[in-house]
Length: 118
Image (cartoon, rainbow, N blue to C red; front, side):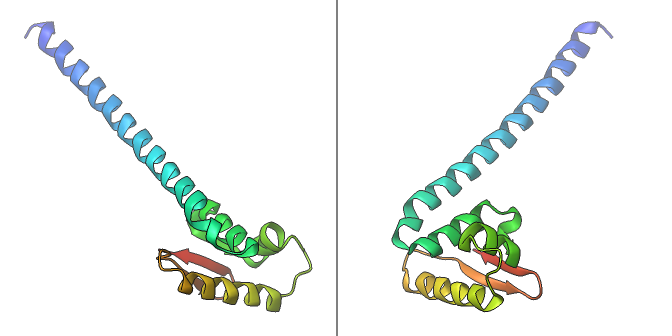
């Protein structure tokens, strides 16, 4: 067998790897663009604390925030009580329910925090 078919086969494998890499990069770019457009478009209609909360959910891994995350990044008070956090979540849920374009909900994860579910 000549080396030409092997060269072609190697080239095709390289092209397949490059295509797979490009597909991953495209998916990642589209996800980032989607998150950014959601943050810019949808969050402007909510109150400041609710929009901060939703922005943090969108940035968080698995869209989940612990009580401490909410204290530090949304309320900006390390000593905020769990009652204050529950009140914030309750207000955010009501605002999201009243919004016709919002198709997400905040779910409680017992003893861990809250998760934004789409």
